[in-house]
Length: 145
Image (tube, rainbow, N blue to C red; front, side, top):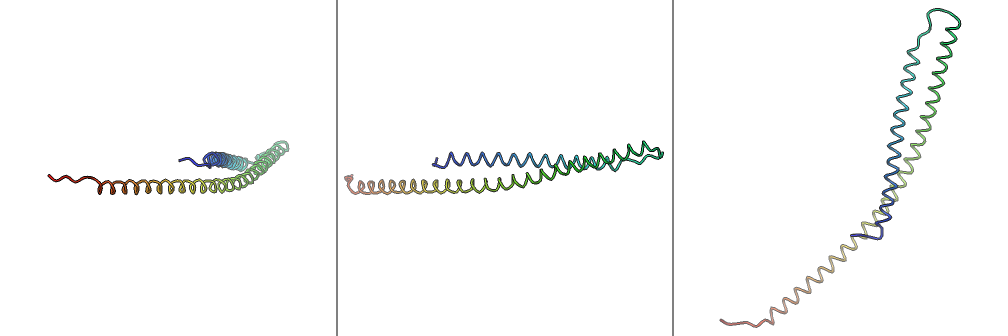
């Protein structure tokens, strides 16, 4: 059975599905970024101080470690932005889900009303047919054989 809420329900469901897809995408991006940060930290810890105390090599080592640290900081800032984006998407998801549930509730209530109305009409019809059959049974001629 269809109701006046079918089209609205479909639209709300599409919105919820799109936001769910955004959540999946942001979770995947967060996981990738976390793995990238772990890899950068491992590379930073794997760096070794040069054994020879040549000033240029020490400066190059210092510059490389600073570059790694800066990159890690930038990646962590991006990760924080992703986390805040995820929070926003979660809020939108909850709001969209509430809207969907409201429309779905109205849709189901209208379906129940239509079903109840159909059941009452069917019961009326069955009662009418039963009354007609009962009335006809009394009026049928009886044959004695």
